[in-house]
Amino acid sequence: MTLSIISFTKNGCELSLKLNNKIKEKNSAYYVRLYYKSETIKSEIVEDELLSAFEDKPEYVEEDLEQWVKTQFADNSALIFIGAVGIAVRSIAKCVDNKLSDSPVMVIDEKGDFVIPLLSGHVGGANEIALMLAELLDACPVITTATDKNNVWAVDVFAKKNKLNILNKDRIKAVNAKSLKGEKIKLILPKKIESDFKYDENIFDIMRKDILPENDEEDIADEADIADDADVIVLNRNSKNIDIILNDLEKKHKNIPLILSPKEYIIGMGCKKNKTCHEIEKAVMDSLDKNNLSVNQIAYLASIDLKKDEQGILNFADRNRIEFVTYSGEELDEVDGTFDESEFVKEKTGVGNVCERAAIRACTYGGSLIQKKTVYDGITIAIAKRNWIRKIKI
Image 1 (tube, rainbow, N blue to C red):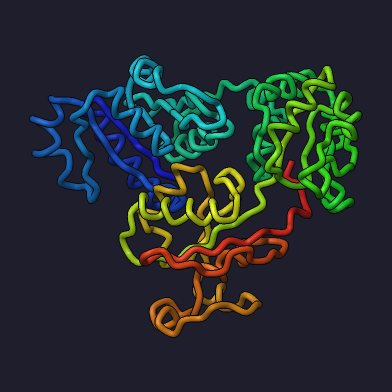
Image 2: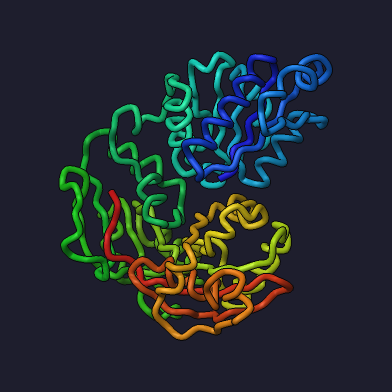
């Protein structure tokens, strides 16, 4: 994930530089971009005395702050304001839209005493990032979400951990409110999940039923009489007709449960150096369109570790909130199967096929290719459908 850190004073700018170094030392999962918005820093401080001891240089924000925020939101970057909460609130106000897609936003005071997640604490990961930053700065994390303050289970965190799409976000509040009261959550799980997986009986009452039939021509409304008694339903698969399914449920049932669907697919990718986010996106979206898939059905983007810092891939993954995982050449070479091997690729990477092997390697419980290696002007794409899933994370 990309962390865009912006400061407004000399102290704030110094803190951003130090924080950047700490993040680079301790947590390679984040890519940091530094910015500042201050004519004083630009003219008197940064060029002369502040940057000499630091490798990474912050960028001056020429544009209006609200426009800068809009650009960051479009890229799904996490925003970290070093300064007053009021600056952050006013700057992001026009961009706040959907709790499932809003960028995570945090505020740190310029002395580094407090880290405050302001927006998208659960799905966007602001709470998690804030805890990481607070540990690096030896600061106090100011977490305000009720489920976190009371240390109780939250359904949006549950969905994120298990790579599940939330299909009707308006039900999140009701489910979490029940959790806060200490009441058990009535959860319907697919039969295909292992019957012996571990779960906290103080949290869940669990029923097993495959709510979604194998045929997309059918709907679930007639067999979902249990929906009135359920708080959360995890579908056994995704569906092209999910909007129809939700509409049917709303017509026939008074109490609609929160419905979650699995992200069943993995994109394996290889590419030449310095491919842009736009080029990556064009190749991925073409493959998804050909397979009648949406980006919301993708659990992972996978490649070789030589590409772990490839900015075009990182930007695409950030923008679409897809976890990007990489594997060594040795790990990919160990993947069983018949793949479209290339001697040229093997000379460069140590393995004859990156995209197909990476896609299968990321299928924790096994899977199969639904699209073999497809070449797009220096980018290779393969898609695997993973076996979903044997264990649920609480």
